[in-house]
Length: 278
Image (cartoon, rainbow, N blue to C red; front, side, top):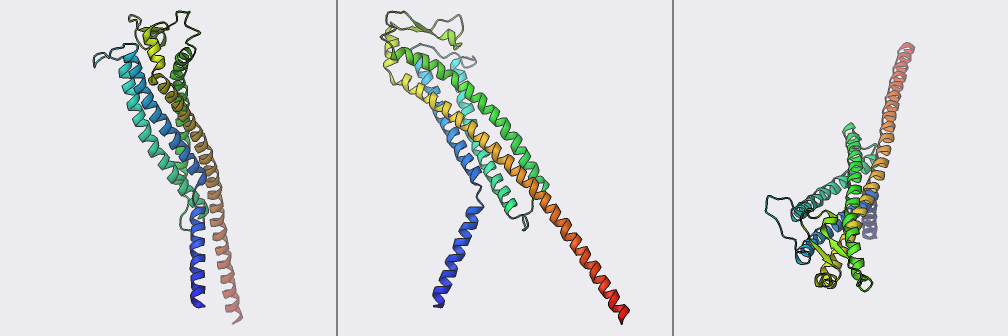
């Protein structure tokens, strides 16, 4: 009987401990972090492969040749974009961890307000800094989303022409890279609808795959924007909670101090009355 009671108490203690641990998880920050990682992974992975597909299309069908190493051509720009993608993936992996840790500390500070873990001025400054930084990153991701829509629009036009190849067969339409600013005006790299290169490009997997990869990259950038907005809401709410909690903490400290002073005054008067009586 005693063993059953001890086992029941142990199970109850484990259950309470699990509930306490689950209650300390910042679920809003967790959802925003998952959304951020998914968006960044989608943007970086699909964007990197889409850029590689673009290099293949330019070399095989438009016959664009890579220039010298010291020249700034379209291939050099694509390589730079790839390195930027590597940096974005690493930076936002670390930033997501930092925001998640800040969410844990803020949640713990609010829940354990009257415990050993107190809210400090440094903690409030860190929360304000994260709000400002997240707002800047949100604007940056909005710019990335707008920039990613450009290749989606370009590939959509080419893909539409390939899907309606019978309709444009009579019209001699050409895809000139000078229209997109990919090459200089002195060069002439174009593919017309009646040529074999255009037919091979439309039948190849590179065009269709690259187009849909850019769409996925655009969706990933949009998901990152949503994650940044979610983080802003979470950080602003945590800031408001921390501010109110700090006021409550000061009020409780002042109240405790006044009660202690009243207790001391009452004790002193009681001793004086007792001495006068004796």
